[in-house]
Each structure stands twice: as structure tokens, then as C-alpha cells.
Length: 206
Image 1 (tube, rainbow, N blue to C red):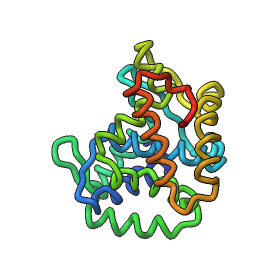
Image 2 (image 1 turned 135 degrees about the vertical axis):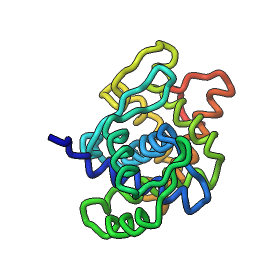
Image 3 (image 1 turned 30 degrees about the vertical axis):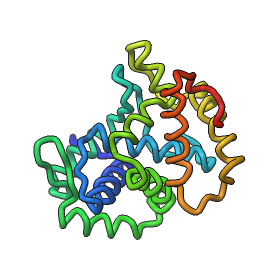
């Protein structure tokens, strides 16, 4: 029996590839997962429970977020011709863009779009490599690199640490932001600044 692909993961993957393709960028699978993990955290900023994201992530020893559902979605999208590949880099195909336009009209996926758009929008404000570096400084990912082992992400301890950051961020920006790119860029900039200063990622925003 062929295993069903997670529809949320398929939509997220195709959306991220589509948004970055518009900007003339192609992504590898690791970069796609970075943006979607950032989108999931923007959902947390907005009070969306992790359990409602539809699938989970683990930290790999190189501090990258990984989801098996996104890997399966990637294979399916490529096999169906919705995503085109050149080496390991992916862009959305013409057929894929038509399918994405159809999916975006579905009520099921509408709540995810603001967070995905905010995450991909961060690549407009800062280079893709900087977004990747910032996300990998998220406390649980950062600790996974230090300990050199895989672990589940966004468990209770990890969420508590992220919420401490977001509470201060919300006091500065407000909760009802017009574009989730704003908290994404501010938070990533904070993590990068803390790293440059040699500070702990668990510290407060300044």
C-alpha cells in the first residue's frame, strides 16, 4: 500500500518553493525545511498550538530542523511534476503554480498562509543564508548542535524558551502585526546579535 502524503506538508512545501521561485531563488530540501520551521514558530508567536501545525520536527546534529513528512511531500511533488529540480535545488513548475493557486483557495490551508508568507518574506529583508543561520540559532536547534544528537523540537521545554523571547517581542511589536515578516526578521536579528556577542540564546530581547 502506498503511504499517503501529509497534505499540510505538501501545501507548505509547494508554497515556500512558489514564493521563493517568484524571487528568482531555488532551494534545496534543507532550506525549505528551515523556512517552514520558521513559519511554525511564527504560528507560536500568534498563539497557534504546535499540535495544530499538522506534523512535527526533529533537530539533526548539524542543528537543522527536519520533518519526515516534508521529505515525503518533497518526493511526491517532484514525482508529480509540480516541483522542478536541477541537482538538489528546486523551483515550482508551471503546473505546480496552477496547483498552488488552487490549493490557496481551499479553506483548509488558509490559516497557514500568513505564517508561511512571513517566513518566506524574511528572505526579502535578509539573505537566505542569514535566515538559515538565524533559525539554526533557535535555542533547541542550537543545543542540538552543542550536544551532537537528534531531539524532538518544540516540546514543552523548548516552547517555554521561545515564548520568553516572543513575550518581549510582542511587547515591542504588538500581537496583531500586519505582516509576520516583521517579527520573523526582528527575532532572527536578535538571535544573530546574541550569537555575535557570545550571549546565551535564552536571554531577553534588547
